[in-house]
Image 1 (cartoon, rainbow, N blue to C red):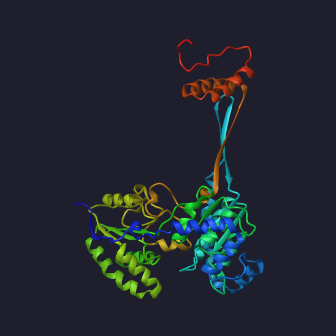
Image 2: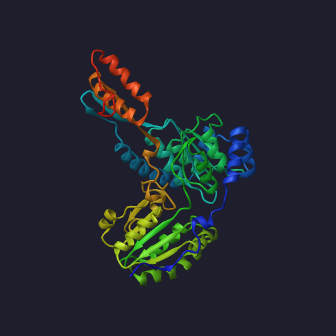
Image 3: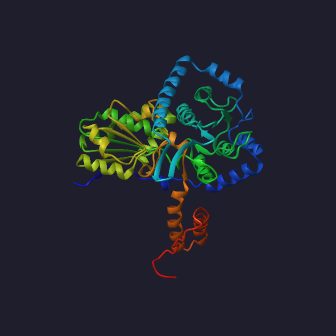
Length: 438
């Protein structure tokens, strides 16, 4: 049989999207024009914050003192895991060189960007893990200056646990700025910062649109939409684990799609019966998000084989892909399009979201078809170099001159000609691109 929907979404990211471009463009223009003063105004009006924008060393220390020791231990645990994975990634990125032909040397160098801006969401939830994921990865990459920005809470500022995480992971400057103003402050070099070469980190639709508009002026990690997650499950899966894994990801937001793909009708029916009661167990702010996401965006798909489930997954290219099925090695080999892959019931997307090691800033909305998530690579530039002897230059110049003339690029050809004339003044060279006589 062909894949059938047991539950079909009534909305998509596109139909649920609010057009924020005009308002974000206006904010960015004001921030570029008025600089620090505009950022302070937006902090006052939008974040209800009238304190210092740059978090002082004293405030960092005070925030650290407020964080319970048990939570500090958990944050350090997550930091160690994420740092270790990033260090393993960094070890795979190497300089190299090769003698392409006698006398022609070429190579590549790996150079970290000079400055990075890490945005850490802080509106609905306190995203401690996002601070660890972004700042730690930039630090391991060797970025010399790392700024971090997060929304302050009225009368409080950035929550102490987030400040502790930012400080632990190596943020050079921390800004009490949320949303568009936080992103723009780092991009434009406000408050004494160097202008960011790259902006990274998740955020709401305003943050995502600001990064989209600023792309080109600065690099960004990716264009991000609402978080999404897929579970692949067969008859061996535990329906309760599957249901909670779907609910846990649906609480991200009202428009966060979750998908179940299965070959077992009984499992699908059981999961669909469990989800509403599980959502009801959550605090209401979480439940409201999960309830809306499940009602409007969730899908349950019934397939007839593992291969068909894999084809569905590759088509959707989910941000998070969790396989709870037999023969995990087969799935690891077969699956091709996802942001991050979770294999077996012993792991869960929540582990990856918080502390297991691989980065949780991942491609959404099907972008897993063509890109991966945030990594050390995003903070590195792979640049190339070349050097030649005069002997090698002879052959290069001949080919360059002929190809350039065939293309009609005479200036390029002359750049080659002049070297032949200088290095080999006594030789005559045929620089025509064809065998025809002139």
